Image (cartoon, rainbow, N blue to C red; front, side, top):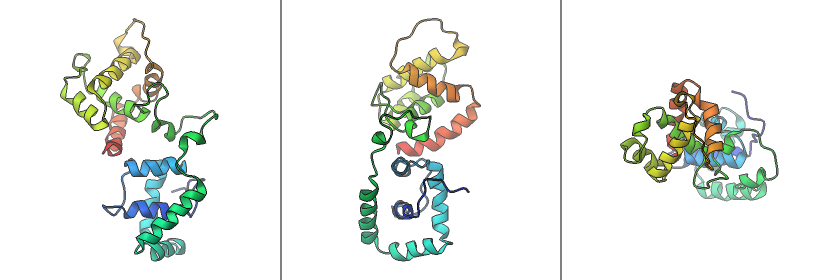
Amino acid sequence: MATHPLWSDEYWLLLLQLYLQKPVGIKPQYSRELVELSLDLHIPPVNLYEQQFVLRRRESAVLQLVWDSYAESPRKLKRDVKRLRELKGFGHQEEFYEGVEVKETFETDFLPLESNSELKPVMLIMVLDLYFRLTPITMVKDTPEVQDLARMMKISPSTVVEIMDVFQFCDPYLNRDDFMISPLLLPCRAIWDRYGNENPTKLSALAAQLRDYFK
């Protein structure tokens, strides 16, 4: 496993604090806590997920020292993590990209849409996965799967249906020739371009992992 270029040994403290949160152990790749740490560090969740296994093995002298110094001293760990965060200025991912042309990265998937602050691209990914499991006639707010997804993501079923309607417009197999004006068209089109023409099993596997983010 290659270490991410932004990784610093200081970050073992942040990862240990996450690891020790109950239930103690490896946190899922897309758990909300791990994603939030990823956003703070600008390091993808997959890298932090893999680093947890390195942390657990504690095979280096540095990691053994981290465990010896902090594993049984939660107050000391909390104090030093707070100090580290203050020094590094974590928690301002939006400012990190302000005024900068951003390439498509994992961060943008977990930041609110400019056109609708209630939604994030990661939520559009979840809706697209459900889109491929339904037929157009069942893409309505009374469908149980629509209600379940809306409940999980804490949005209304009507919003899920609205997103699905935009995906129908993006879907070349439906051959819709009408005209659509929607603030969700561009972000939905971007998600469709990334996943809509791929093997749906890959999207399904990703969506299954992303469910941890909404727990």
